[in-house]
Image (cartoon, rainbow over all chains, first blue to last red; front, side, top):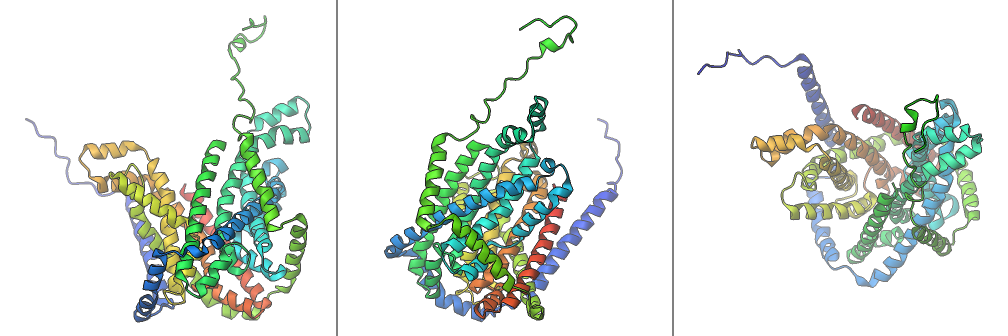
Length: 271
Length: 274
């Protein structure tokens, strides 16, 4: 039997690969360095204080969470129902207002990037704000209650839906529009018979998706006085009534999971 | 099929146009679903006492109030320290959440876990964890873990872990099975299959998800201070309760530009990755 010719020593690693490895190493070192820096400079409590807090609170919390208080079930359900209603209207307001915004921010419909720029900027600005900041401002401006929460959600949804809608509009097939124009249709015909039918199913799907997000948001907006289930929750958190908190959280979790499941099954049929 | 007219392109007659899809009707929801959605909307409007007038008066109130938020820049020195704490909370939470989430990704994907019950249980836990809003975690943890950044980090870590595992396990389930089969054929165990077959395929998407969740965490860490979980939300709460709207205005503007900068940077990095 002949031996395979000796291939010699293992060749050194190619240059590009070595450079990649070094870059990876540097990135990992940077990430870990920042972690250490953050932990060292952060105002963390001492170990004994944390353990003391845990000792005092962990057992009551566990006991409360194991025995949810059914006495607040009715109250929690009613508050959660209000939360769902808030999310429905907030999403609807956002979707209706996002519709015109989307077309004002779409390059292809306006014919130039310059014309779409102001619309896009407004959408980015809205998206940058956390929802709860809007809610705080609305509560301060018009008093507490579900309407403040609805408006906060509505405005925030415009930022998200407007952006996604305009992406959808920019991605439509130009064929049908050209066909309508070739047959003598004007801009309005193109809009109603080509653009709208093409984008509606995707719009609907994203509106549902936003509804899922808004329901989560609505269930905490009450923490700043903007209505929904967050209000009874924050009161009980102040008094650490864990058994009642546990019941409220069960209601929140169950409703959110049910709505998510329903909504995603409808979305799957849509697109 | 009609014979091609004389003189026409001989190939033209052979091409039958693809049948048109029945407009959007087939793709669209049936009317019953629309009816339910419309009914839900009507009931919601009735139950919350919402009307169009409120939208206009509310928006007017909003802008009138906005004028009172004229920023008082003398508050600036107060803002930096909690702002940095906010970013640290988001950073640490993203880091630890990713570390804890990594093993869960593979336990929740059908092609990397061999034990079906493990997968089902992992998924169920992730679903429940994800359905609890991040601010709620912070509100529950703040009284237990002493007020300050610690409960914030823990709250957002849990959130990061659950979201990352869910998002990425969908990516893992759609990887090309070829490399996995090749590895299996040469006798690799599950961990080797994940390390050499799955990770190289998902690393770009995984990194992009981590950046995306970091963006979410930055926004969340701005507000978790409202419930005592550290960061700039504490200061926000103080300005609000002392009606210091000038300070509040300055804070909001600073937060706006910092979040905007981080978002743009992260979006830029993500588009380069994929």
